[in-house]
Image 1 (tube, one colour):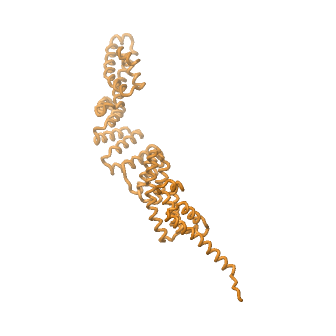
Image 2 (image 1 turned 30 degrees about the horizontal axis):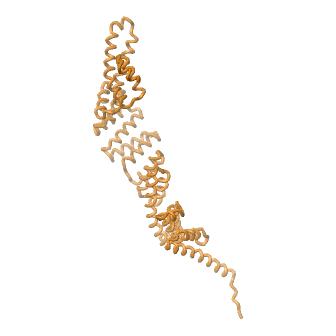
Image 3 (image 1 turned 120 degrees about the horizontal axis):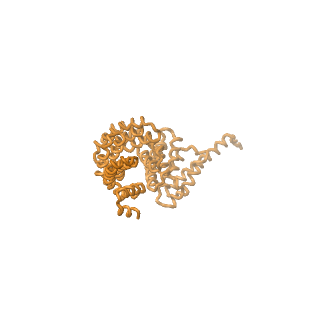
Length: 376
């Protein structure tokens, strides 16, 4: 009787084949367990298959893992989702591994790409949920993963910009805005954010003006960008140009109380100074609760009155006898003009500075009843 002798190579081949078959069986078992909704066993089998050296690079294994973990993530049963609270991220990683290990146009690669489109939706929804719960870092993480899936889609970038704004991370937000700009996305908020960053962080006023010019070309009726030009020129110390931009802005938005207030401020600085009260009053007419305009209008006349009293205090006895009383009466008339504005400010916001001014005016005008009321 003749015996066949197996070579060492043949024995090794048989052993390796058995090992591969065993791990392929693990993948098949995972599929069957998944079909039976036994995700505990499905997860166990596929986790083992994806770390075993024989099937570590299997596009099929990684694709099946993606499916199982995606199902875990989307399950409505708490006991299933508890198997891995980060299951959707694991699914995302598994699908990417399947694409990596498969041929460029391989079947599993194609299926994995299709599944990633569904994962993208989950990431967006999880980002929105995290944002609503003020978990901004989590929201940004999910949006970043969504960007990796669809880098040419602007949706995740836009949502991420909201989260970074809420987090007050203007550097991260600016990076997102720049990427959106490369994708040809345009919005008022985007340009406003880019201008703000150039102006406030980079201190690059020329860049800020270029961005403002581009924004105005796209949004010619948007008042925001004209006022930004005003702020930039003001920051540069170019007050004449700043005033021009304010006047341009008022032409486009004649009912804007804030614009008239700013025009009053800059007119006091550049002149003609006597026009400033007119602009402050216009600001108040448009918004009676504009305390800045009320205060500045009062201050315009208050400072004139105070200067007159300083002048009379420097007079000699003879000069005061000749003109002092008349000048004091003029000062008191100015105090009377200023007074109602400060009283309105104090009624809206009882701040210490306004109270001090009212005390001085009441004292100068000998308004004892008002003075006592203020001191209560």
